[in-house]
Length: 463
Picture (cartoon, rainbow, N blue to C red):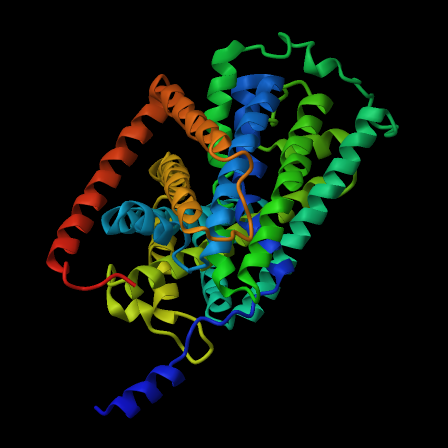
């Protein structure tokens, strides 16, 4: 093939299109974070810590804000569809970068299946005539088609998807404040008494707060999608900066605000609060149709999270394929700039779980949630260590950074310390310890496989 022909082919080849708007990027970051973690995980946290789960949320929220800021600095300086995987590769070497890339992709694949299963289970409970496996099949099929569309259309779809659940949370907060203030004639306001009346603010002590922290940390998984989506935004440096800055007050407003309403309106021991906290509060308000409407919103929230996760998973395996760490077919793009093969690879396991939902619907979700366990801790640790290395490298090079981490390196070390604290706490919790050991073993296995692959392709330069 001639040089001219080769150049011509390169210039006309389809590529990821920077068509996502800043508002879509912000909403996508929220769409990835506001899912089962908030709507279901918050209730689990209340069940183990009582009102003191607010402390757990504040600590976890502070940690995720630090991680997001570090991630945002690296992405604004060097946007890439591989995001933290590419940054880890530049900071720690090929094996490390590809290990975290594959670990993240596997986690996302499982989360996609878990979100679809959870949404299907809720739908089937509300409408018994719809089998759980049928709902799961419909959800998986519809969102696969959405992810195969051009990124601008996908971004708009996710924007309205996420906007709907944000509006619902705002309405929930308004109803909750009205209940606390005594403005509902059908509900007798407890004031702030529920925060201390049932065994005190921390009825299960520091142990409960620690257990709540383990639950809550995993609730924030999904915020990292903004780092991956930034590569397809119109102005990556500016867009990711805006998204990261806004995540701080949004976390406080949506997460902390919602949990405050829950533990203030109802005793932390109230029936239904641990399993369905939003619905439990609305049932207490006796607002006609409110609980049913919230059930629909929760399904939409789960599907929005699934949608965002599918996007991030497809882009991660696309990046791995571009770097020679995954089959080359996953790096191929359709004419609309979408990595179709990567999308289909990321949903395959989700369709497998459709069959599992048919065979054993009650056992699928717990198995899936247990499988992803503590992978978020590994991911955030890689982000923090990569940031410490790359930031010093940028400073030596005299490079200007569009977005900078606060109080570097002190807050970066604080984040690393908090991650270490969560790991130590996990070691003293039987279930969490098992997940941590499984995740560590799985990560080591991926690292060994990547190391072997790198040895075979040592002469192939990284992108």
